[in-house]
Amino acid sequence: MRRLFFRMTRTQARQMPVAPGWAAEVLRFLVGGLLNAVVGYGTYLVLLHWMSYEVAYAIAYVVGIAVSYVFNAVYVFRQPMRLRSALRYPFVYLMQFLLGLVLLKILIEGLHVSTRLAPLLVAVLTIPATFLASRLIMRAN
Image (cartoon, rainbow, N blue to C red; front, side, top):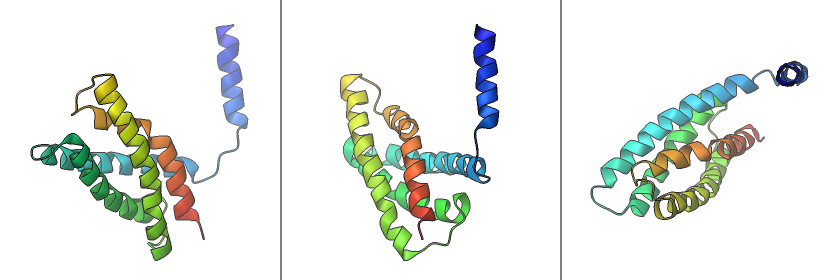
């Protein structure tokens, strides 16, 4: 039975249509996300010395939006940086910020996860939605 399941999965995977640049975009997005996480987390840790975790998270988040937009436009989706996409791009991160803030509160206050670890978990949990929304905005004409 187990063997049949894996054969079916491989067969289905071979038959699924994949856009030519899709896998490369996902890989570049993950690299960019890693870079952005390092910049954002470093900013968060520095700011945590002087302010609450909520304020530190918000400021680090804004820094991350700027880094992310440039990296995603130039490297991930290979699109020119346009005023229209630059103005729309923060809405992706507004959605992600609100989702992240809810997750952060749940992790820290509900599940008692460390204030140092929780933002890393939030970053991982919000990756799929962020990729799809970023791709939609960057590829829009």
